[in-house]
Image (cartoon, rainbow, N blue to C red):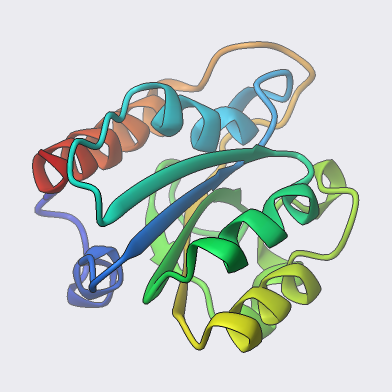
Length: 160
């Protein structure tokens, strides 16, 4: 775990029973590609851990998430909370529409994941990575890529 992660972030990232990690974002919008980057670089071998890249349409994977019956759901997405580029924060579900990059999601994230949380009873945490750029270009900023790499390394460590 990165030494710069707060205790709140460390606790949010800790798996609990059947844990589902859902990544969000678009690789065509610079740092909005944090989620897909993490998904591409993580491989879970433990059956109680699962990873899904929802891209820009998380509503399309909601039923899959519900059917898997997770104990915990961890969402990883680019965010704008006026922090340092690459900074990681836990975003309360009720604030997700203000902080996450909702322009790339076709349906409000809070609605989609409130349904998942209600139907599964799972603990739901949102991990936001502060963006530096949302320009229409491929590739992460160095700050976002460093954080995405740290997240991927953490998930790989717990998943094997």
